[in-house]
Image 1 (cartoon, rainbow, N blue to C red):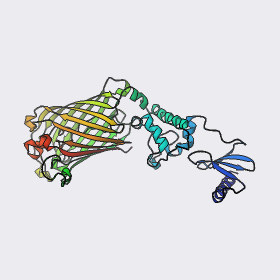
Image 2: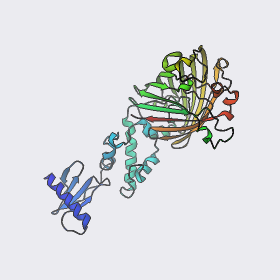
Image 3: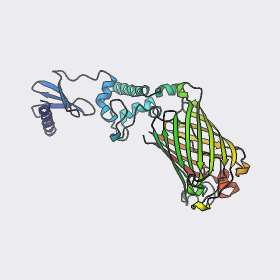
Image 4: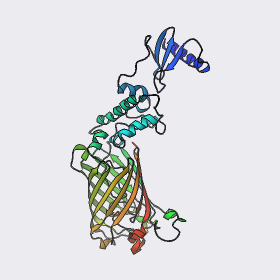
Length: 422
C-alpha cells in the first residue's frame, strides 16, 4: 500500500506542477523542509514522509502544527543537523551540542541564522512564524546542556565568561580547553625578513609579504576535555625544532572557578629533534573581564634555552649551542569588538638571563582575529619570529642581527590559522 501511495504521490505532484487546476489527487507540502507531503485522495488525507518512505492516514483534518520545539526541529532541521543536534558529517553540518559552537553564537545570531539562512542553509522566514523561529532557537540553545560538563552559552554570557578563538593570541597561549577526542590543526606564518612599517617601497613589496615566510604547523589532540597532547614543527631557518607537549586544564571558569588555569610541559629538539634540547614548564592564568574580554598571564621556565639565531637547511650546519636556563612572563589581552572579531595584544619580557640570550627588549605583538565555526584566522604585527615555547620571547634583533629590529619600526606581518577538524 505504501509503495502504491508513493507512486500516486509522484504522479500527483507531476500533474499539479503541469496544471494546478487538474482534478484528482492533490498534494501540498506539510512542512517547510519539503520532507513531508499531505496527499488528499478519495476524500481522505495521508501524511507522506518522502525521506522515510512512510505513509499514515490523518483523517479529514489538516495536519496539526508541531506541538513542541522538538517537533519543529524534527520536522524542519533534523534531516541536516541530526535528531540529536550533533550534525551529519556527510552534510558538513556543525555539532550544535559542542560547547565551542554554543559559546560562539549569541541568542540573536541563532534567531537570525534560522530566519535568514547562512551558507548552504536556507532561510526559514515566511515558512516558519516568528514564534516558531524563537522556539527553535531556544531548543537549539538547550543542546548545550546535553554535552558533558557544559553549561548553556546564555548562562556563560550571563556569568561573563569569555571564549578564546585560538590556542594562542599571536604566540602567547590562551589555555583554551579542548573537546574530548577533538583534533585541532594549527598553522603560523611569520614574514620576518622585511619590516611591514618602515623602509622604502612598503606597498610595492606588499608590506613584506613578497619576502620569504617562516612557516610552522602542529596538531593538538584532546585525550579528555582537560588533558591534551600537542606536536609542533617550526621551520628550517630557525634550526627546525620539533616540540612535544602535554597540557592539563586544572581550573575552568565554566565550572565556577574564579579563574582559568592550565599547566603545560614541553620539550623541544632542534634539527628535527636530534639535538639542542630545551625543556619548558609553564602555567597559563586567564580571567574573563567580561564575556567579551579576557586577560592572560603566562609565567614560563625554560631549561637549556638557546639564542634565537638564523639556522641552516643543512643538518651539519646547525650549531651546537650551550643551553641557558631562562624565565619569562607573558601578558596578553583579547577584546571582542564584534561577536566574531577580537583585538589582541601581548608582550613577553624575558626576566631572567635575557642578556645571555641576546634579548634586550620584550617580544610583543598585536593583531585582529576572526572567529568562525571551529576556525579562527589571526592577522598580526609582531617583532618575534619564534613560535615554540622557548623561542617566543626571542626577537628579530637577534634573529636578523639588527639591534633595532625589536622596536616598532621593525614590526613585521604574521598570521595564524587554527581549525578543529574533529
